[in-house]
Length: 328
Picture 1 (cartoon, helix red, strand yellow):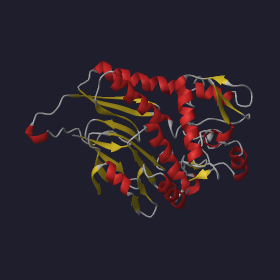
Picture 2: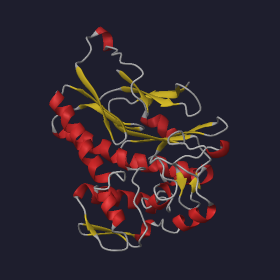
Picture 3: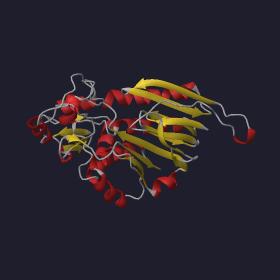
Picture 4: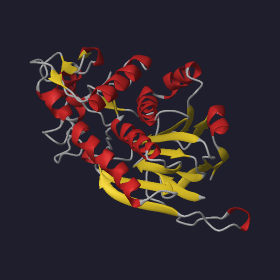
């Protein structure tokens, strides 16, 4: 059994053998990709298997990064309002998933939010700043997932100035694809993680949910031996603090300002990691009341959320998906 901090590297490397049996051989590797640490843990595989998973993550970083001016995502943004861009199957797939979640959430998730996050806030790009209300208003007018068109093998943003930001789904998508690479190569047990996005398959991993207001974990659970996608969105990343007020990168598309109802939201699905990533982002920016209504319509989503006053919310679906759940 392994332990992992959701969103961090392992806080324990101890293998706990079952019934006194010797621990199963494993390979654990860490590399830096997509602006964070990527971790691959596999049982019964080889270093070549781990290399293949990392190679897929690196490939996707080159396609999806909005920091790389040569990426396909950057090209689509650069050609906004001008012409469609021929896109690779992976880019088309992640854009379609993003649009699906946008529709499901009524725009709480929006892959065209780059006009705000990249254009005026400049999160993670040096010179992070809090824009004025007029700047936010103008940028907000360029955020509309309905104006992202996909036709055949081409993608197109309808108005000049629109920008893609796939930060709310890209890491989850990369985790999902890396796991698929491993499984195609015959690996049947393991875990892939990128920051707050984790996919566990076939092995019982202990997960610690990071305390957004302090050090250590605020809750923990075991994944069992099935297949689970786990994603956490929290306002503790990329914080800028002008005149004592904290701003973070999880913006509400409708207001252009950070979501304030949650400190963190963790989503657990027995499905796709890209969806878990996008749903975690969506629930965070929806706010408490709207997210509760959304969850009533989506009973497949397990959720653990921390509110600013320290209140903790979790639903029955979470407890049905995992074992040994406990609030610490």
